[in-house]
Every structure is written in C-alpha cells, then in structure tokens.
Amino acid sequence: MKEDFSRREFIKTAGVITAMAALGDMPSSLFGSELPMATYPEKTGLLVLTSRPPQLETPMHLFTELITPNNALFVRWHLANIPLSVDLNEWRLKVGGNTGKELSLSMADLKKFEKISYTAVLQCAGNGRSFFEPRVPGGQWKNGAMGNITWTGARLRDILNTAGLKPGSVDVMFNGLDSGSLPSVPDFKKSLPVDKTLEEDIMVAYEMNGEPLTMLNGFPARIIVPGWYGTYWVKALSDITVLGKPFEEFWMKPAYRIPDNPCGCIPSGTTQGRTVPINRMTTRSLIITPSPDTTIQKNKPVEIMGVAFSGGYGIRDVIVSTDGGKTWSEARLGQDKGKYSWIQFSHSWRPLKTGKYTLMAKATNSIGDSQPFEKLWNPSGYLLNNVEKTEINVI
Image (cartoon, rainbow, N blue to C red; front, side, top):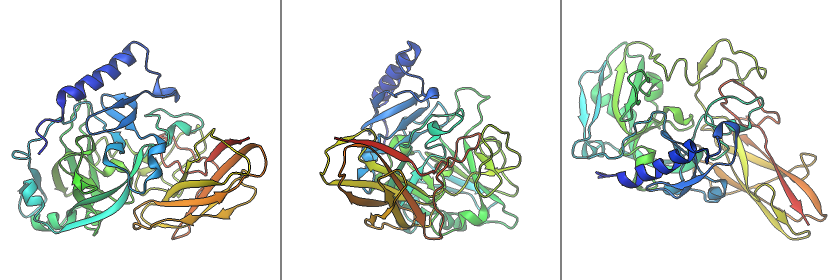
C-alpha cells in the first residue's frame, strides 16, 4: 500500500523546479539546453524536462546495468494532476463495456490471475527528439527516456476472458488516475485493437523488478505492451473498457501518429499526409561507455560498451566502428533476457595513435531490420534510431 507518496516531499521538489523555471534559472528544454537534476520520491537524481507534469530523464551513465534499477527509470506523464497517493483498500480496476459482465478488481483479485514475468524495454516515443534536424516541438528528450525492467503481473487476455468479450468488440480502451488541470484538457486514454490485447504477452503489471511499481511509474498497476512504444503503457490504471467501434479520442487521433509508410518518415520540414498510430519500436543501439568527449590514454585498453534492442524481435548482432564508419568489427553480446529486453554489447579496443576518434555502433534484429545512417524525419519527433556517433579524445 502506498497511502502517502511523500506528498510534501514531491510538492517541495516540484515547487523548487517550477520556481527555477519562473525565475529563468532553468534552461529551456525546448532548445536542448543542459537540464537541471532533481531527486523525486523513490527516485535517484534524474534530469528534469518539466516538473508538472513530471518528465524526468535518466542520465546515460545509469545504463551500464542490464536491468535498470527502479529508482533510475525515466518518468513521463502527460497531464498535470498525477496521483500522489493510492489506498489499495479502495483502489479497484474496473473492466466493462462490450463485455458479458463488469469486473471490479482489487489488487488481491488481480494477483489471483496466473502470474507472468518478462524483461522488456520501456521507451518513450519521443526518445532522442532533441537530436532531430530540423528541430520539432515537444519534450526535448536526449536518449534517456528508456529503461530495461523485469515486469510482473497478469495477462490482459485472462482478465478480458473473465469479463467475457461480446461479439463485435473492436478496441479496448485504457484510462488511468491522472487528469488535466482544466476541463478542456483531454483525458489521457489509449486503446489497442482487440486482437492485440489477446496476445499472450500483453500484461497488467503490478511489479517492476520484483517490487511494487514506483508511484511515478504507475502504481498500483499499468499496461505493458512489450515491443511497442510507452504511450500505450497506461499508468495508474483505473479502467479497461471494451468498445464496439474504433476509439479515436485525442491521444489516439490526432496525437501519437506517424506517416503511413514503412519508415514512418517524410522529407524534413514537409507536411505529413495520411497517418497511422505509432506502434512497434525501431531497432536501436547506443554506446554508453566511453561517454562523449571522454579523454583516454594512447595504447591503453578500452572497453566499448552499449545496449541494443528492437521492437520484440531480439538482436542478432551489433557491429562497432572506431574510425567513423570506415571499418567495422563484430561486438560481443551479453546475457540474453528475451526478445523484449535490451542486450548489452562490448568491444575491446586499444587506440594506437593520439587524436579524435569517432565511435559508432549498428544493431540488426532477428528479422534483418537494422539502423539507418541518416536521421529519418517526421514532424512529431518519433522513431529516432539512426547510427549515432560518439566523439572521444586520445592523448
């Protein structure tokens, strides 16, 4: 039970950050400036894009672990009024709509369903948005709006089957305990096609890394859609509603849409035409160490380490370049935690000359999808997965 999410501490932290912004002491994230760092309840120091609603980014150096610690996982809310306390004696997950019966599930009820567990990357659709050229509006994330977590909970399909899906069911809508500060602000509701919700791995999670969800990451329960972007992973879940027609409210349409083509991209600066809802994550790899602008010694061994992941297809291989892409070597892959998890890669290197070096990594998933060298563009700043460059100095 989390009856009081250190309410006073949270408000104090948010208030300090808000005051910094009002006084001009906080660099604007709109233009990719350096971000302030703050420690919120249940969290280590995270980078603050906004304090209300909280958008907190994980510093890259915290990604050296295979499993992201709960206190280091990024935070992304869309609406200002987020739950700061939930009494499990009163909380119920309501399931209804186009169903044979309505359910009102307590946490004890939820835990009666068969328990499943797997490791999956949670990633914001706008992760890396600050690197788009030309720039696009929205939260200016660098690459820290992601994390690799072991989730535990109940299959969504088991819950829906208990409620009984009626013929003609089309979409399933999810709503949480957060709300807008004004009546005109659209409630954050997301939906999935019925066929998707009946897949084996869609989960209503109540644990992360073997512990209850942190409040900022969706306590007491959230939807997990492994392999898909985090916009569907509705936090602080309160309602699941089966619908007999497509759900097209604001956060499904017009929000979170991408161009309807294989790359989800259009020529930079142009206007997109037909769009579809964003869905599966693209293949990515990121070098974590050495970090950009690191200075290392000539002729000393260096271990290049990073993470790679895909949208539920696993990673087949990662290649690494230390000379800006002129030559490539296959990296060693670490422990495989499953197709939804990221995998660590490493490559041993000994620079023989002084000067500037450009490190690069390129991942390929199990069905052959890889990363483009160029940045593919869309007006919402989604799907960024180009091969990135890490510049370091050797002395």
